[in-house]
Amino acid sequence: MLTAEARSRLVVVLVGARNPQNIGAAARAMQDFGFSDLRVVNEFAPPFEAAQLEAKSAVGASSIMASARLFSGLPEAIADCALVAGTTAIGGRELTREVITLQTAAPQLLEALQHAPGGADEPAARTALLFGSEKTGLTNEQLSYCQLLLTIPLFDPGIEGPGTRHLSMNLGQAVAVCLYELTREGFEQARALPQLHQALATSADRERLTERLLELMKATGYDQRFPANSREHVVRRLAQQLGVTQDEAATWLGLLRHVVRSTQKLQEQEPE
Amino acid sequence: MLTAEARSRLVVVLVGARNPQNIGAAARAMQDFGFSDLRVVNEFAPPFEAAQLEAKSAVGASSIMASARLFSGLPEAIADCALVAGTTAIGGRELTREVITLQTAAPQLLEALQHAPGGADEPAARTALLFGSEKTGLTNEQLSYCQLLLTIPLFDPGIEGPGTRHLSMNLGQAVAVCLYELTREGFEQARALPQLHQALATSADRERLTERLLELMKATGYDQRFPANSREHVVRRLAQQLGVTQDEAATWLGLLRHVVRSTQKLQEQEPE
Image 1: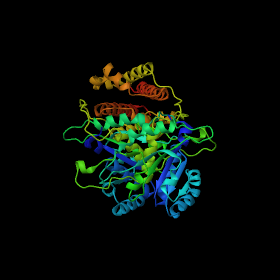
Image 2: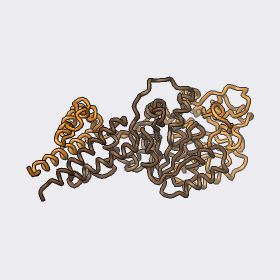
Image 3: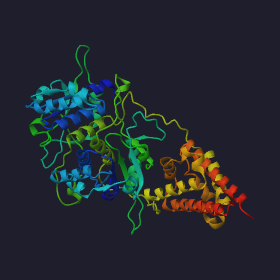
Image 4: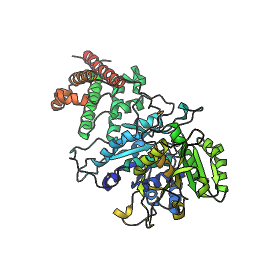
């Protein structure tokens, strides 16, 4: 059961959507299921602007498109989000991370939406649901920002009949199905659970951890010896694990900073 | 769990759909969720023909559009169907019949699909799911052919905020959401989600990480400067976060080991 407050905390992020109609369709699905925070990540403004223009004359989703925001990069779009969930069609890709079904992921997402801690003077952390571009879906680099990967279970004809096909849904339909699942138990008031009195680490916190970790790898020459483990998206995935709460993230940040400085200090004293 | 046979018994009927793109979107949603029998009721052939033409060049749903059938009247389109379920947005209409939610209707639809009786020389009766036109939805006359009326529960802003709006979904999205609900419990020949070919990190792995982390804090003097953050149980909690999979744990272990060694090496070279 989703409260208005919980619904307001969900952020739908369309990463690299190219078709203005799909952006509009996602906005309409959001309106249908009572969500409002739409963010579009695209280096190019035209698809977003066209969607906004179209929405002005369309029924339904116009208010959501009007308040939708365009970002040129994913990190900026999800900076205020604690939980970041990415949707993926899996496809032929070999999985290196766990992907769960939408049905399985929904309780986790609902929990995050309903019990997001936040002080009186501080906005509660948000939960992001990421959808990739129509053509490629979310890339591995984009998925590296996510703590949770989910997939809508589709029918695979490969099992029963001849021919394989690209298992992926139309963008607007995928958004509609995900939001339907989140509101499937209804819109009523949520039961009250004790609040966690700790702010959760956000995507922005984790981005700072990624930077420090990269810095540390460079300072100690780790990146030279293990370049495969030092690629940015690999390091980002490691940094995703650091710090559930903001306090913990701050401790990690402090430790990494300390180690980098202590290394640099030792290097300065090193005899030439 | 839907068998192939049960899935083959579902008929999706689009009554009066005017937009070829919506017909194509419905076909794509059907393909996504493993259904195949699409029927379009329209006095005018052009939208249907345009959708078939478009499908020839489209990815995905082309085989469903190719075998889709056009009917000029609803009775002909559902002649072989035993259970006929109509979708309705309710809207401002005064209800004279019971309308249940999609979630509530799904078990009845599944029951009909899975246990349709049928003789050896007689095809099993089919179950129809009707969707109305984009503009009006199903009319009362069209609803009179249905034994079951269902609605997708949408968010009604009238309850919480000002302004009313037409509560109805995009046609393709409505089809996708209904078919998602019908397959939500899985496909009989379910494609298990690809196995994660990675062992998960164990408690022993995390204990090694705790040790390394303590070592690092000591080697860099972090424990001297921040003793509160260097207590074993605090460090253990931080180490719990390192490495979901064994590969990840190994990467963290390698990084920590590398940083400790690099620090020790620098300290050895340090002038006394």
